[in-house]
Image (cartoon, rainbow over all chains, first blue to last red; front, side):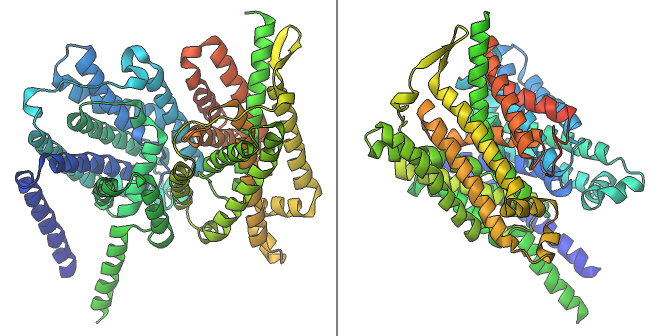
Length: 318
Length: 292
């Protein structure tokens, strides 16, 4: 019991120390790196939101990037096509992302396994195709650029702090959801759907709610993306973007809460570093993914946790 | 809209459906027997198109070049598939869908950049051979010969697969493996060899699809990304592992897309996804029975 408590304190201490370092970081780095880390924050939120469905819900959600794109496009469209204030855009983005998630999820949760995955893919690509073609609203292929944002969000440092604060708050909320009765029930539906159903849990409803929550947070990540990039393009909603998010979750570890965040950080930073030396980033990513899948399928944090748990249990026996 | 336009568009959609079928048949075969969702199938298709281009260029884009390309490209892709199966896939057969998917996705990423390194980034094109050039008249509609050629090749492939699966010893083992792998093992059949062979056959089909599409389109990077989604949807709509289901849904997708281009060109790109979405919602387990 005391070791458990100790490890909790350790985790908390690490988190606080990490946040403190992140708070002073912009003063020590050049603008480009500040921008890069803000991108890490955005991507980390996106990957963590996916993991609620993928890791904790055990659902083969193959097209999570769609809700991210919808959130980003909502901000872009409100800011360029209407005279509504920025606050409305920010509020609307996750709500619309969640609504789309509700519609897509409503159909998907009736299917299982691979069929679930394929339907997310089909309906997600449908959304992509609509965004790609609806020129009047989305500018189609060109995307929307130079999206206006309020004065206080124009400097990269303020964007950095905004994304950091939003990420931390969102992660706390997601963590609470994971540990809540709802989150635990979701785990039960993942591990044994049949038994869950027979003890009176509405499996489909739990899955749908998780799907919508994930869509909501993905929409928030979309808002952050617009703050960082100030532009959107239909490629945000194409399926290979979603595959990238899946890789991040796998890399960090699907079973560990901070896994997707770690995976996002590694992939974003690595793509920058590799980009300095070669134009073949995708080749490197492919090889990396290959190694990961063959030798470390539980992910980096998943592997670390396994080792840690093993050591702790051995210590306990002694 | 007169009858001739409708007929010719139907015809073009049907022939496009044949390409879909050839690619999707390989995918559904692999899924049925190996239970692997092979994202790399689109990459193999792309590889087929690029190899076909190289072979036909070697012969100065002459008539022999095309036929040789049609012969060589699928076999080359088949050999690549064999290496993939023996070298990588066999280690992950008992893992979950996500792991398998991401392994094959890593091959998509690797293949994309390798194609870029080998063939460069500029668009390539390949000539249609003389005999298949031009078009003919059918009830007032003008129809390209090459599409007619595709309409012959598609059913031949379907027939060949049917004969293989239902009449040959190996084909029967394939079907048995798809139904109950453990039982096949218990009976003393070397299912490992069956897996390798089925994956190679699937690769051959992907390569054939790529070689067949090559003369009708610009051969470019990224041609794998859209076909693989189409192929996946076709496979799922048809019922996983069911070749006839794949044939039916290929035709639905091809014709649906062609009519979409005719009637509502501005949103034609949406049509296949919409068809797939609706069919999956109406018949979640696919049009035909999943295991054959």
